[in-house]
Image 1 (cartoon, rainbow, N blue to C red):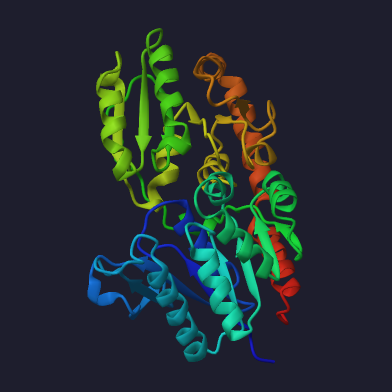
Image 2 (cartoon, rainbow, N blue to C red; image 1 turned 180 degrees about the horizontal axis):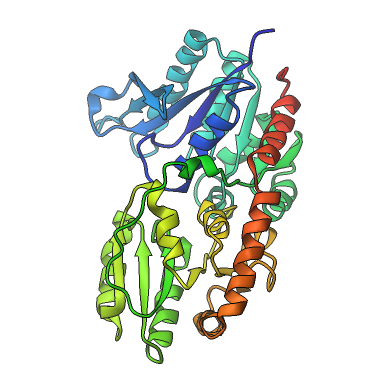
Length: 387
C-alpha cells in the first residue's frame, strides 16, 4: 500500500520560534506513517512575483517548497490582496499535481492561510485538515479574517486544537461539521541529543529566567514589572534568552532601559536550540506569564529540564502544569502575584526541586512522542487517509 502524501502548509520556513520547531517535529514524528511535504506561502515585495512562483528548498532535510507572491501597486485589489492569495492557491494546486498529494494540512490558521488551503483542497477534491496553533484562534478571530476561518473550518474534514479549552471555543464558535481533535505539543529528547554547553554571562546569585520570542503575547510586560519588584529586594538577575519581535523591539527596549534594575537584565538574544537546556538549568526559577498560549514548547522544555516554573493560567498551560504539583500558575496580568510566586520559590529550594522533579516526570509520561503520534494518526484517519 502506498504511503499517503500530505502537503503541510506552514509559515515561513526560515522563521524562528515555536511554530517552526513544532512543524519540524511534526514532519519527523509522522515520517514512518506518511510523506509530509512542507509548503510555505510568503508575501513578496516584488511586483513581478504576482503570479506566485515556486521555489524548491529543504526543511530540516525534507524536500519543501516556498511560494511567493506580491501585489501590484497599481492594482485596485492590492489593498485586500485578493490576487496574491489566489496566486498562492493556484501554486498549491500545481504542487498537488506535481507531488501527487492525497490531502492538505494547514499547520497554523494565521492570516488567510486556512482559506488558501481550503480553496486549493476544494479545487483538487482533497481532504483538508486545519490545525489551530494558539493565537490564530485566540486573537485572529477578532481581526478581519473571521469569515475566512469560518469557511475553512466548514470545508475541513478534521480540525485540530492544541488544548481542550481551544477545542471548546472552536466547537461552540464555529460549530464545525467535522470532528475536532486535541493534540498538545510534545517534548522530544532527540532535539537535544547534541546539546551544547552555554557560555553563561555573569549573573547574580539568584536567576529568574525566561526563554522564547519576547513579545506582548508572552506577557513580557508583566514579567518585567514583576522582576523590577523582586530585584528591589534581592540580589538577582533576569536572564532573557531569545529574540525580540522586530516590530515590538523598540517598545520593550525603552521599557527595559527605563527600569530601576535595568542593569540586572541579561539579554542573550537568539541562541541555537541545542543550547536552550543549558540556559534553563542556569535558572533558579523560570517564568512564562503568557497572555495567550496553546501548548508552548518552551514550557515543555523547562519541564524536561526539571525547572521550577511559574506560568500564566491561560490556554493549554493548566493542562500541562498542575498548579502546586508541577509548577505554580498565576493570573499573568497580575504582576504582583507573579512576583510573589517567584519569590516564594526563591525562598524554598526544596520546593523548587520537588516541583522540578514532578514536572520532569510528567512531561516524560504525558507529553511524549508516542502520545503525540497517536493523536496525529487519529485526525489523519478521520480525514480519510489510510494509515
